[in-house]
Image (cartoon, rainbow, N blue to C red; front, side, top):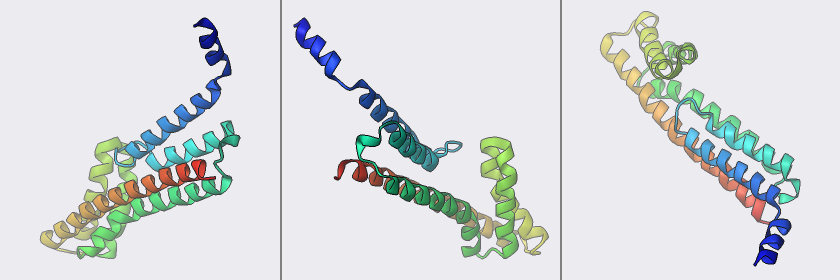
Length: 175
């Protein structure tokens, strides 16, 4: 019994298990972070791939895959950033409203979670009222568009994150 246990402990590549455990934890956190505020989901998935390739180059994950994940990360954040402004536009908001969403989003970053939620909404509404000279009703409608657009951005970010994870595992296991 002790010989078989000794053989198992000495022949197992524990570093391999450790790297895969780290990769899996970062990827699960990345997928969760794609829908949770303040957690950079797609970036965590990208970091997981880079760390995995650096620590375990023999695992079969290529630098081409890492490059693809980089592009998907950029796409995810681009979609996320533009979704609120596009939602405003789709619901009748003006260019001022779209600019207000972007400005409010940037300012909201400095006020943690409440600022990231209220900032784009307030920015779009205020810019519609002050600069586009809209009445309250149309300004509220375009602000609702911000909510819808941001929700769609969240869904798209989750989809892109799942595609990133699938791409990683396809590259890792499909030789």
